[in-house]
Image 1 (cartoon, rainbow, N blue to C red):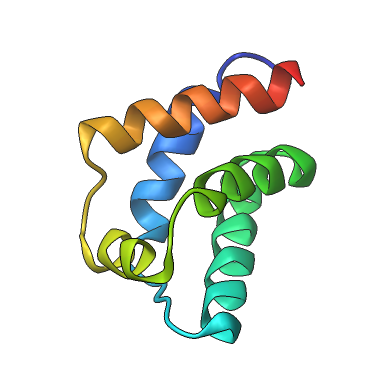
Image 2: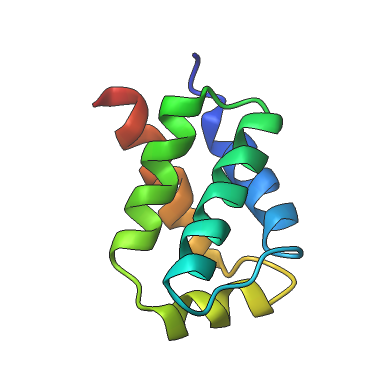
Length: 92
């Protein structure tokens, strides 16, 4: 996969946040799975999508994820984070 992951991740995640919610541990897992599936549908290979979402979820609690999924768009900081995660996951 080429370095084009950065725009793919940012655009797919922007769409994904519109339809996913997070709450209890089952909701958290469901949100994680749905986000991975949407990244794969957007063109990422599953291992890369898994890595990106794992990196994003591991540093956030449920309240932070609920806030993330409640917004319609990514913040600039989130765009940068997803881009960095995408690069790290491709390199690692």
